[in-house]
Image (cartoon, rainbow, N blue to C red):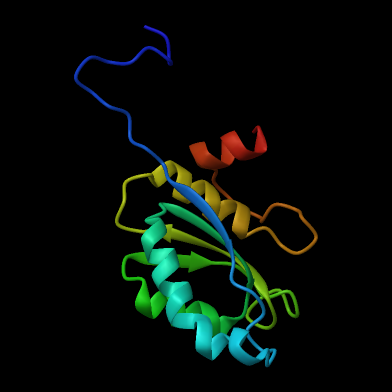
Amino acid sequence: MSATTPVPGHEPPILRVASFNIRNGIAWDGLDSWPLRRPATAATIAGLDADLLGLQEVYGFQQRYLLRRLPGYAATGAGRTDGRSRGERCAVLTASARSFPALICGIAVVCSMNMTGTRPDRTSGSAAESALYGT
C-alpha cells in the first residue's frame, strides 16, 4: 500500500496551520492600538483552532497576553533585539495537547537555531532533526 492510499476505516489526522500578523504592540495608533485590539486578536486566534500558528510582529508582552487567553498553546521564538526575549519576534504557537509529536519536535529544533542560521550543537539526533537537516 502506498503512502497516499487511504486505510479503510482510518482517517489521517488533519493538521491546521495558520499565520497571523498581530501588528506592533508598542505604537500608539489610536483605535488600532494593542490595548484596544487585543481581545479581538485573542478571539480571532482562538477561532482559527490551529494546531500550528505563526505570529509576526509579536512582542513578549503580547505573546504572554495571548498565551494566558489561549489555554493549551505553547510558544517558542526569540526576540530580534537580543536573540532571546527583547524586541519583536516571529513566534510559533503549537497546540500542545494535540498529537503531532514529530512535527512539534521539528519545530523546536528549527526555532532553536541561532541568529546566524546555523543549527544548534547537539550530541544526539532525532528523527525530526534528521528529516530537517538531511543527516
